[in-house]
Image (cartoon, rainbow, N blue to C red; front, top):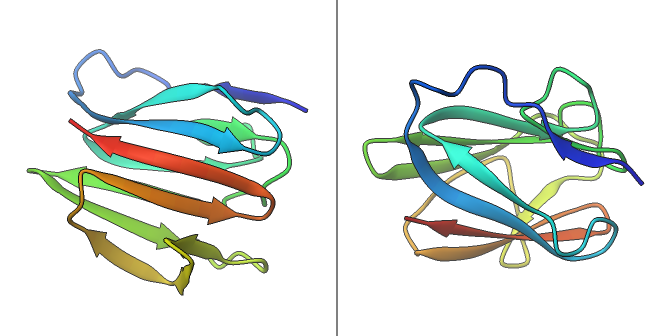
Length: 109
């Protein structure tokens, strides 16, 4: 199981949170989430690469304290706290995101 962050050049972007895998393959891994759009999927051009996800599974966008989770037309869907979403603005400081057999927790800072 391959799980890693590529992220490109993030030197000029502020960290807005952390995304941790709490269940499933890659459990225990944590990744920085930066201001702007962060793409999570299995394709090597993603900011966070998780082999068992779809090529571009979902994105997390942070702008001025607002966090928006968007499913990127994945077949298996993206869930926030058990609810399938297409796009959702999240307000909690900690949310649970499920994609395929992996459970992530996003903590805003």
